[in-house]
Amino acid sequence: MPSGGGTFTLFRVRGIRVSVDWTWFIVLFLVIFWLGDSYSAVLGPDAGSVEPFLFAVLSALGFFSSILLHEFGHAIVALRNGIGITSIRLWIFGGVAEMDRESDSPSTEFKVAVAGPIVTAVLGVLFAVMGLLVSGSGNFQEGLILRPGPGVDGFSAMFGWLAAVNVIVLVFNLLPAFPMDGGRITRAIAWKVTGKRGSATRFAATLGQIFGYIFIALGIVFLVSGVFGSGIWFILIGILITGAARAAAVQSPLIERIEGVTISDVMDPHPVAVPGSLPAVMAADDYFHRYGWSWFPVIADDGRFLGILTRDAVEAVPEVSREATTVAELVDDSTSGYHVLDDAPLDSLLGNPDIRKFGAMMVTDHTDRLIGVITVEQLGRALEDRPTASGPA
Ligand SMILES: [Zn+2]
Image (cartoon, rainbow, N blue to C red; front, side):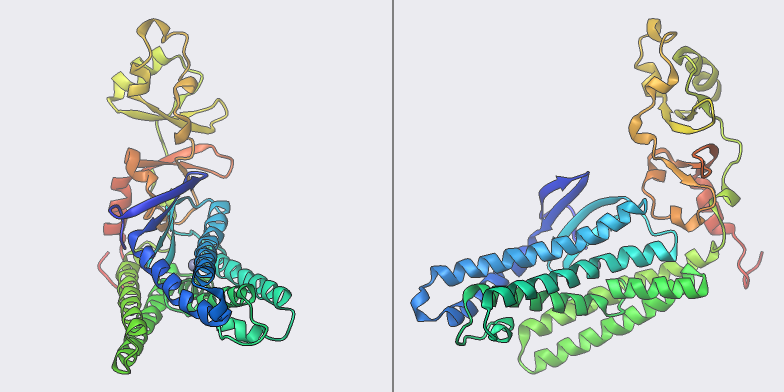
């Protein structure tokens, strides 16, 4: 997956960076180039060269927006289920919504995975309806494949093409080839049925690898028959799917090892926490000097987790004001989300980037009360030591 170099940020919305990779421009160029010719044929010789080009650009924009909306479908459902989205990126093989962690239940996994295809299906229907409305006559079918014919004008051809392209994206995405949407849906169903994420992942990843090989084989068939563009595209996407599926398969024994283990099984159930009402001067003496740590979780009087207090935040307060400043005032608001539920599966922490920031994660119950802390070391030890059914204890 490309990252960093050659990525252009388009805009940010609610903290999500929406960007395009340079390889996406290859797609745009090919779409505009190929559609320009098709629109010339549809519009006939009287249209000149500007009008077909404008229709091609409009169609490319519609395609671009369709893919973006598909990814926003995934992103909105993920956010609603408490999964953060760091970025949405478009590249040569479509879009990627990057989540900051994996789903912790099969139903969440299913909802997030199915949201993108639902958006694409709705777009396909909308474009088809618009095409039918503007064409009026029965020639919309011709517009679907950009074939010139009586009654096919630029707009019906454009809506027809956009409807067709969304249907293609939909069908392709729903193939059960993990890590594509269909593969994630398959994994969610297998997870629900077996109750085991690890074995469900292994099943979906095996299917993904099979589909990857089928794509590569199809690509070779295309190449041999002289269809080079499709041939290369199928081979590349086959390699991509095979690689990603294999990576997921390699990770699954690790996840299987901690299957059924919850965060509360591994966490430290006696966390040292600073009361939010404490003056900063006492936090400095009784906690930072005494323990020598660089941060502490802060709790309200009722035990609710408020956020993280760092040594730097306390030391930034002038000594004369430390008596009058409470700890709660010094808590960094952005750290109030650094907690996980005690009954969440341990493997849900694996992809959580927040645990790396402080080397630990606060653990709360369902009423937001702080009841534990789990460190990176504890997580690592659980992954190594956890006895398996077959291995030595
Ligand atoms: Zn998708």
